[in-house]
Length: 278
Image (cartoon, rainbow, N blue to C red):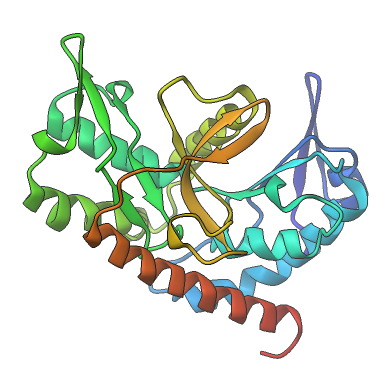
């Protein structure tokens, strides 16, 4: 399945359905060409429909794009689609393939800001771990905020009951709630998050701040190696680095195991689909 693409050259946008034109020498690829999730659709149905698209796009990137291309997968299931894409683009470093959890981070950051009575820009270092799905792990243990010129840790000023019973499930299920309300996905919010993701990847994160990106796992924080897993990262010079040494509480760690299990299951099912075994 070939999705129509829009190329940006200087001040010119070129719509095309030609694979070679769409992917030729690109520096950055926003891969949004996926079947959108509809109300009542199971993730496994979405997976089966979309992994073949990202197999084709991976092969096209491998053949036509610059080997330094930065790839952001937005189409769901984003983490596993990014993994499939990278698998079929073996000449491009796996570190160049990412999936978007910035939308989840933006949503989580807003909820924390609203609870604390500050602006979204005043909240930093809210983390999204794992998969861009209902198993994702929103985490405020390392978050901070600024109020009246003073920087403070967020967690002591947040009610634990609110964090565990309202904040976490709200962020995890926000995508489904938007679809239920609109009968469509949150397109504009996703577009804003994609821009945020790529801007920080290219231009670097601010000193003292990190952002959530789903990247190839090296096993940090006990995540399984070789899947696309959302971590807190800093970026500089067009490269990302997983932030090490952060506090991970027992409650968060147990949830990390669930999202890791889901990603491993998705990986196995996706590769089976691509290889014609399902």
